[in-house]
Length: 308
Image 1 (cartoon, rainbow, N blue to C red):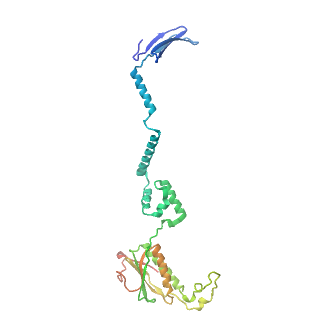
Image 2 (tube, rainbow, N blue to C red; image 1 turned 135 degrees about the vertical axis):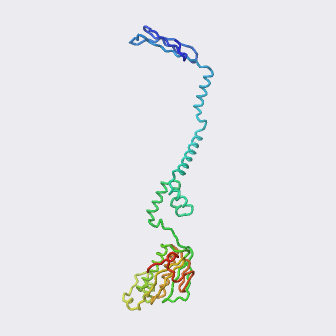
Image 3 (spheres, rainbow, N blue to C red; image 1 turned 90 degrees about the vertical axis):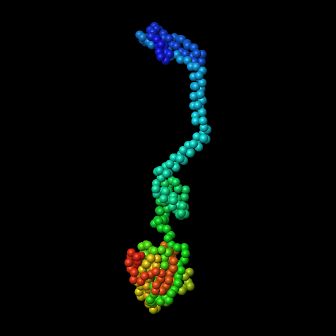
């Protein structure tokens, strides 16, 4: 019986052997042989013979497919490696744009202006996990100072005196802008510490035994009775530190304290201006500076104060 695929189907009952039909593609011929049956004999056995022939056209198609499978994509190994690198780069760029943490983007933008932060991150830019580790390491090493930036001024403060009376005068401070609450606290704390030291007699030139000694290379001698023999020296009074816009002032009565108390104050204010709070100028004396309005104590108009 013939089938649609070109095969022939035979029903036969050979007694001791079975026909074996095999098609030879190279010679395009059909060979017939017999195969011995094994122990059992089947009452009915079926033999399927599928006979097909390939034309020259089919052989050419097969060869073309084989050559294509050998050639692959038609690229060299180096070309495929470069393609893989390019695809990986595109994938990283996609992840950076769509999955990159917002804090990492902020740090990268900050590095453009902050050389210290750029030095901290180094070559970790682009790798959020490594950036996080670098920042955490810097915080462990530097502590709270990592968040503190230098907000002072690189320009030295101008110092002038205008009919300064140590017993009844204002000391004025001109800032580069309106001071914040933090700035008010900083300068107020410096003035308060200066006043407390003066009130306790710290600025007494009659008892400068260590600074006047020429034997600091060795163990200096100190006369404990001398401080009780010299004339006491202490501040008498001071006002609260007031602020209006970019000006601040404090009224002082230095009492019997020596004038080097002013040098000590200026040394403190110089460090404060350089590191934390820029002070444009310091004026000793004078009754009115800038746009100061006497009696104006309304916080809505920029008035602030620090209680001594």
